Image (tube, rainbow, N blue to C red; front, side, top):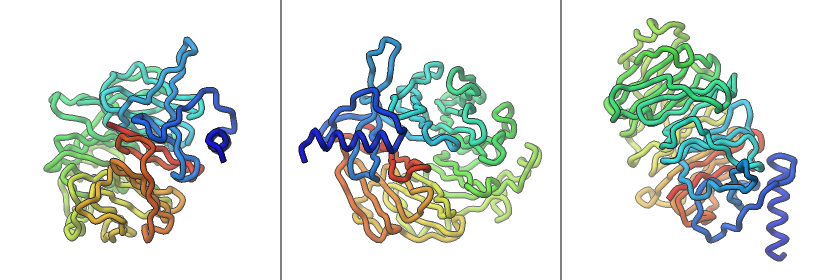
Length: 366
């Protein structure tokens, strides 16, 4: 089969898979290129295409292909809406990947540490930048500052929104603060202070009262809000590692060589919790009370996991990416297939489409 026919077949598959409409722009053959931005597969990683076009008012498309992707975030209520926080270049988003990317022009063009989308109102979006948290209520048209830390050296490192009570918003800082709002960011209270910076905050997918917090130094905690309805109640939970409200899960993790960074902390639809550091991949069936190691191909001392994703509908299907390779397992980690990345740059973000699990997004950085 010649190259032209292969390219046509892939584009047709991608269009039918993603949107049911024809592509209105050209993508570039990137098999051996040094390109960044976002790549997408319609067949779980067998083949990839760079999706980098950004339409302009002049009709001459620009490209996000040189950008470094910090993360990829999908709208919980609309799988076609994908957000791309970048390193140094602001926030980009798409409502239809076949029509290209848009730039959130009213946000600062800076590193976007974290993005969270309200599961009940897709126009409510939060973005963490430097020592500030921004919010839009009109689908990226305008943004306003809803949190500011007086210390410019402190980063708002992560933001998470309660999927059940969407007025409940959590942020974590590089100073170690876990801060919560019950009114969509209008007011805040610190509910925990840890000894090192916050890296991840993950809300349980079926019981949003349960929240997991991971720190920069690979410590893990579980918080149970107990259905608190006021900030006064929340203050009662601060610094109580007594097994009732805040639970220290680190004793269970001591047997593992965790490496240096928690790169992923996410659930599958059957409530399996996965924790990926740069060296190991762990799985818990009991909300972090116990952990089992998922076997990888490479030895731990040579492993470098940059990003991890699990099929939200099938915990046996999982992916991770390194500086040079893409790994896929369809049997819970018993066996893996590996492929070279479609660019000489490093993989840095992964996202599985929750409505079509053949579709996987790959974010790239230098």
